[in-house]
Image (cartoon, rainbow, N blue to C red; front, side, top):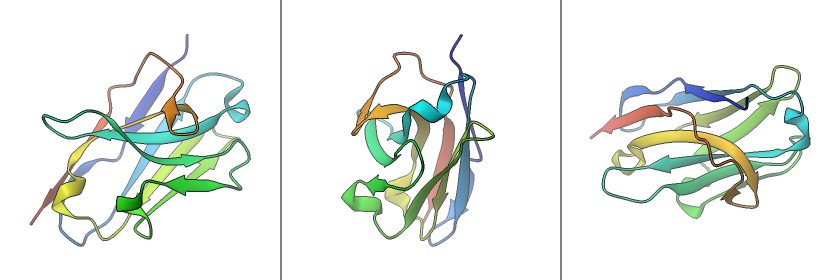
Length: 119
């Protein structure tokens, strides 16, 4: 059974940093591009960042470029999101998923991890 478990969220002041982690359970993890998504209260889930299978290519939504960095460790089946210079508008529940471009591939989502940025 495919599982995704996100962690690392918390409450931080504007300008602060957090590092999110995502643990994936499937053995062919390295065969998939991975991405991070977020859902703010009252809004639809949106794509945030993606990374290709090898980790050599990354891409981001415009609002986080220069502030967020996605990375992965295929030996550990892990994906990370380093978030710097956080803003109140980054407040959301953050999720990871396998991706094709900026579209999630798996219908089953993990529990997510809450990020709250205070002004």
